[in-house]
Amino acid sequence: MSRPVKQIHLAAHFPGVNNTTVWSDPRSGSHIDFASFAHFARTAERAKFDFLFLAEGLRLREQRGRIHDLDVVGRPDTFTVLAALAAVTERLGLAGTINSTFNEPFEVARQFASLDHLSDGRAAWNVVTSWDAFTGENFRRGGFLPEDQRYERAEQFLRTTWELFDSWRADDIIADKESGVFLADPAAGSFEHKDAHFDIRGRFTVPRSPQGRPVIFQAGDSDAGREFAASSADAIFSRHSEFDAGRAFHADVKRRLGRYGRAPEDLLVLPAASFVLGDTDADAQERAAQVRRQQVSGATAILLLEQVWNRDLQEHDPEGPLPEVDPLPGEHTIARGRASVRMYEDRLATARRWRELAERQRLTTRELIIEVTGRQTFVGSPGAVAEAINRFVQADAADGFILVPHITPSGLDEFADTVVPLLQERGVFRAEYEGATLRDHLGLRTGVDAVRQF
Ligand SMILES: Cc1cc2nc3c(=O)[nH]c(=O)nc-3n(C[C@H](O)[C@H](O)[C@H](O)COP(=O)(O)O)c2cc1C
Image (tube, rainbow, N blue to C red; front, side):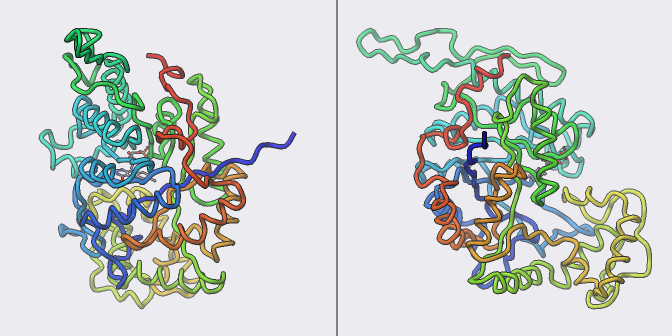
């Protein structure tokens, strides 16, 4: 028996704070003005996307002690933006990245329950665990969490919020005007929770929201992160957007689900994906090369190089070969607040690899950086991109994608107008929203409560 055709899930990542976003392009607008968020959200909803996604950075990135202003700098608060977007959209899911290290469960639960009410059941929470002391300095207790406790706290944090969400039942408010009775159960909202990280009790302030609990995303890639996703998340925002790596990751996390009594369809894998479209494949390739040059100017190439070399290379010529000096081992001091530097933990080995590649392909420093930091998942005509996306999903390299355009806020328009209709024609992407909630769009079983009892 052949397998049924999978439906593709698509989401839109508001262009973020890294060099993927080309703020210097003449078409780029503000990443702060509400008009930009509204334009982006309306395009995603017009295209019947599952949800809009906001990343979060709790401290401005720095390099050599200065704000890293070659990238877009700064972003407004997630809940405030998503609440405003709830008012200008009707069906689009609204996903916010909120950290479990530097927040408290009561506050976060109150905010997500409120967002779920305001949006009529469209809220999702991407639980991230960034723990570093640099980010922590912005908060009352500083960098207080050892790295090996980040998922332990996240796990307890999430379970605590679930207790808070579940402290209200859907029928607790009767507001019977005749009898003057407001609450069906005077104990509604009562909670008491104690574990190694939290010791709280009281009454939860927000009555049960349409989804009960927000949809849960997870985004870390470590073994502990994958295990957390398998036990607790509805979807993973992954970085494995290449075909083979995507299939391996998909199989790995789905395999982990059984341990928690969960089925493969209970967890979606949605890699981040960038795209460049053109009238023809050749045209798209040319545009893609141009975008890469915009993303990695000479100055950006030097800054990215410094993150691996861990030393000041301001005098180095980006149009010349790689530096002859080796990277400095030891504590990373050059770049702070940037998660990706962890990818280069073995700096000497990375430098060796890059030197070999630069020599083999005769690349300048800038060309090398363009080559090794390049991440353009789908490049081609609309037909070729639709074909590729569908191939990835049907082959279980992903269950869909979170698209990351490089222009704010119009970077999604062309995709919505040209690729989405082709996916709809193939019958692999919805032509209309069917359900009301984000959980409906994602095809997740309603009542996580039924799946996961605590
Ligand atoms: C695709 C992807 C996107 C992420 N986005 C964010 C983000 O917006 N904000 C943040 O603080 N951490 C973000 N992270 C970091 C992780 O979610 C994570 O919480 C932390 O790095 C520890 O995870 P790990 O050790 O399991 O990789 C992201 C990670 C991945 C893989």
